[in-house]
Amino acid sequence: MTGVLVLTPNPALDLGYRVDRQRIGVTQRVREVTTRPGGKGNNVARVLHTLGVPVATIQPLGGATGEGIESSLRDLGIPVHAFPIQGHTRRTVTVIDGIDHPTMLGEPGPVVTDMEWDSFSRLLLTRLAARSTLVIAGSLPVDTDPRVVADWVRLAHTQGARTVVDVSGRALIAAAEARAEVLTPNAAEAMEATGTHGIDDAATALLRLGAHTVVISQGSAGLYGYTADRSRSVPAVPGVTGNPTGAGDAVTAGLVRALERGTDILDSLEAASALGAAAVLSPVAGELDPADARGFEGLLRTEVAR
Image (tube, rainbow, N blue to C red):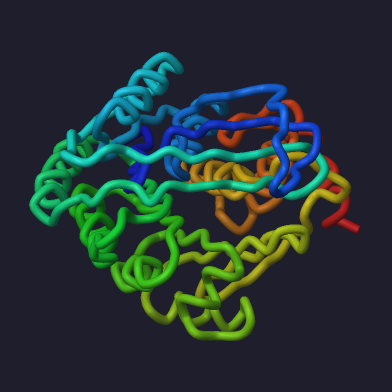
């Protein structure tokens, strides 16, 4: 079994506006406009594709925006298993100036009915054939039962596929209870979902629920990885500035690549952190230069070895 299937529950068409300086209540001239298929799962898929990892996507898509996402991914050479829905896929707008943290405006997305999710899950089962890893990443559409994430994890397991899950809230708990192989929340998501006040306690709670490995990102403080019998951390790459909105997705992609290579997840934290830093240098989420990541990884391994 080879290849990764990435499930994006709530995809978006990402519009990026670059301005000289973000200012509230003031008319501003947009210097550059970018349009990309978005949603966390699509960002992960695009990074995996850049890294040469065989990847396909599956996602509910509706309306002209959904058609645009499907077309854009196919133009990039990424196969798309599109499930048509009645609602219209959302858009997001990110305002970037390279000085302050980007401002993102996200539409709520369509309502996907229970009947549509049931049909989507049947499609997912057929597309999991011969896939080694299922990645589930991103928010759920409004009114979607978070337990559907557990259903997808279990479907993957019936087909012999591993699961990497980057979700939040009750969906994160559901994924842990379904014994997902890897969970990749950020610190705030992990603590909020588990009702704890520290990342060590949050990771312990998720492991006790059934997750095999938990990797928690804490921004400039770095990455923290946990299994039942081991923990490890690596610092973030210092002094990197730019657009951090896709950094976490690049980290997730790095962990997926490690799984595909048969590399221990906790021993791959430097490589994953380096990919996150490389993504910050790109003005668009889901894009990075692998050469930047290799350079950052060397710096991190030197730092950790001291």
